[in-house]
Image 1 (tube, one colour):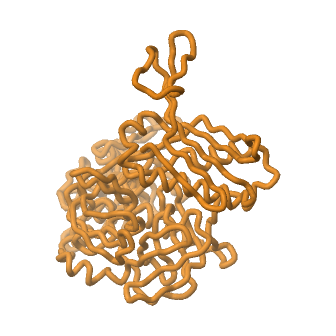
Image 2: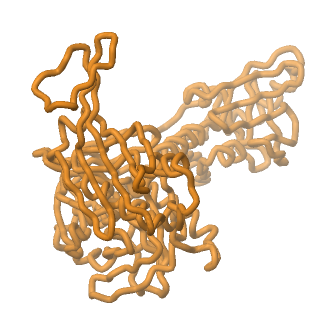
Image 3: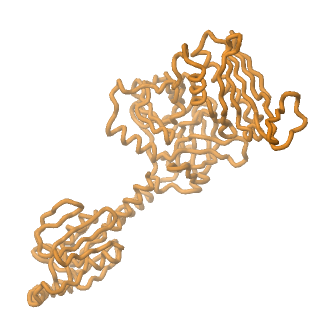
Length: 515
C-alpha cells in the first residue's frame, strides 16, 4: 500500500519533468509566418538556459518568451522521459500521456485540457521553425513540477515532484538523529500500554488522544477491556473505533483522554532489511518489556507484507510497538514462531496502521457506533439440532493457532447417546499430530477446554463428551496397535484410529490426552 503510493508518486515525479514536446508540423502552417515568429524571438532563444533537476538541459530550438510567457518544445523532454505522444493531424492537436496524467494542446488554441479539465491559456501553443512550442508553466503545473524563472541570468529551473521529494527526504534524513535503545525507550515508553480484555491480554500503542492501536486478535471476541498505562493508571476501553481484520489491526477508543502524545510513524520508504529496531510490549503480562533486534526479512503473504524481526517477543506482546533507531513506529508486533534458534517473530508494517488512522481521523465514528466485537457464538443453542451444532463447531473451532503453527480439525460429528449426553467427535490433522502434537500439547488442550466451556455455556443443562481422534488410512495392515485401533476398510485399505483427547463436562470438566 505504502509502496504502491510511493511508486505512484515517483510516476508523477517523472511526469513532472515532461514539460515540452517537439513535433514537426507540415502543410497547414505558412512558412512566412513561422519565419517571422522565429526572427522575432531568435535573440531570446540563444539566451535562455534550462536546468532540470539540477542538471543543464539543452533544447533545440531553445525556449522563447512571448508576452511574459515562456514557450518550450515539448517532444524532446517527453520522449526522453518515456511519455507517449500522439499527434492528430486532422485536429492539429498534441496529446502527451504518462501513466494516468495527460495534457492536450491544440496549435493556436487558447484552451488546453489538463487531466480532463479545461484550462485557459494567455499564450497558445505555437509552431516555431516546425516545432510545437507550449507554455512551460501550464505543462509543468499539470504534472506537479515546480518551475521558476530567474530573470537576472535568464534561466529556467524545473524541479520535478520526485526531485523535490528526494531533496526534502534527504534534508529530513540529515536532520534525524540516531538514538540509543535507552533514548528510544525514554521517548516512547509511556506511549506503549498493556491491554486486558475479558478473554485476552496484549499490548497497544497510543496513536491519538483516546485512540490505541493494537492487533485485531487482541480485541476479537472481547466484550470489555481496559488499557494500563506505564504509570499504572487503568483506563476503560469503550470499544473498537476502526479495524482492518485482514492486516490484524484495530484502533480502540478509551473512555477518557490519555493525555499522552501519540507515537510518530516512520517513512515506509526508508525501512530496510537489517535496520536496528527496539520492541516494547507486555509479553506474558510483564508490562512494557524492552527488547532489541533487527528487521531480519520482508515476508510476503498474499496482499500483505510483514516485517520479520529477531527482537525477542512472546504472548502478550501482540499489538506492541516496534520502533526504528530514530524512535519512529515501524511496525506492530503480531506473531511469533517458538522453539527455533532463528528468533522468527513478525510485525505488521506501521503504514497499514497509518492508513487506518488517516481514515479514522477523516471520518470518526459516533459514540453509539463504537463497541466491542463480542463473541461470534450465540448466547444459547437450546432447541438447535445436532446438525446445526455440528456446523457451528466446524465453523468456529476447525483450527487453532499453536506454538508450532496452525492445527486443523475435520470430520466433525455431533450425536446424542442413549443417556442424553451430547457427543462431539473430530479428527486432528494427522501430519500435525505426528510432527508437533507433543510440543503443541498445551495449546491443543486450551483449544479443547475453550470449546467445551463455550458449548456448556450455550447448553448449560447438557453433559458433554468431546473426543478428538488421530485417523489415517494405509494400503497395508499396520502392526503393533492395540485391538480395535486398526480397521480393515476393504479394497486393500486399513484405517488406524485412536483417541488423541477425551474431554467430559458434567458438573466439572475432565480432560485426558494422548499427546
